[in-house]
Amino acid sequence: MANHWTDEENRLIVEDYFAMRELELAGGEYSKTEHARRLLPKLEDRSRQSVEFKHCNISAVLKNLCQPFIDGYKPRGNIQYALIEMVWERLNRPAEVLEVRERSPAAASYPSYKRHPLRLGLAPTLRNGPMGSDQRQMQKAAVKLNWAEQDERNRELGMAGERYALDYEKATLKAAGRGDLAEKVRWVSQLDGDGAGFDILSYTPEAEKRLLEVKTTKLGECTPFYITGNEVKVAEENARHWRLLRLWDFSRHPKGFELSPPLDRHVELMPLSYRASFSA
Image (cartoon, rainbow, N blue to C red; front, side):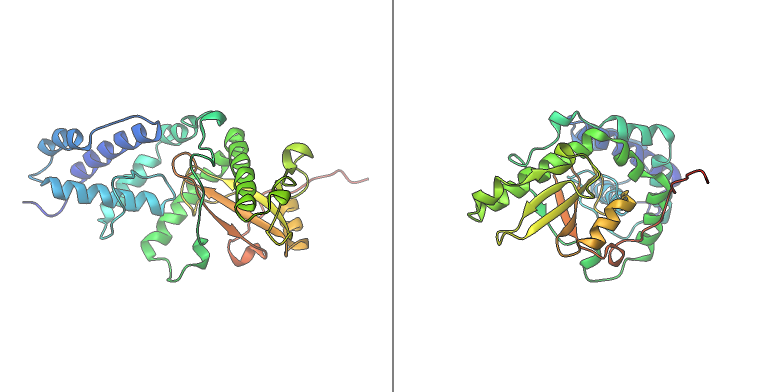
């Protein structure tokens, strides 16, 4: 049995993986067994086990690129560098970038908090252990694809994320026996406009204010996001109460984490635009 996967084998298995991935993202069904049955004769004497492992390698590459991966293929390491290049090439096709955006469901079909309660975890910056060299390289690739811009332009995604966060805050307060505070939670960006520097006014069970700015993505936890100068300013001026709630993998299994000011402790802030006014 061959050990080294050829470029053609890598191309075939990446295409097969992406075919299943697109069906899963669109809510369709597929058979992994049937996919493997059709794929194996095209490969150089590979076992079903080796194909499964390679699919898990592809999931690992996608995870490190902040892209959705197939739930049934959990990420596994020991990745052939040629495979990373093949996945990167597949993602870099203009059609694929468009497909990720155009597959966005309508706001009404995004997960609701009632059916999919939030799994709030640690921010990536608060975990132990340095990022590996391969992961650092793939993170740079994720920035180049500019998925953050796609999230920013997707108004339905942003609205769905804020609505989800609103329900999460109310449910959390009710569970803590503070239904009185749950009734005071306000969707500020919808009621007062988006100039406040935060989206939701909420409270802790101890009645401390929570000024939540919600950033939502269908992709992975390390996907870059846009934040305005006003939001950064409000965060600095209200460091005790302001929190950034990052929702990720939102179209399938919503997860999240919070960041507290100063934001540059967690993320690298890069100015992207300036206000220009004419001189008197």
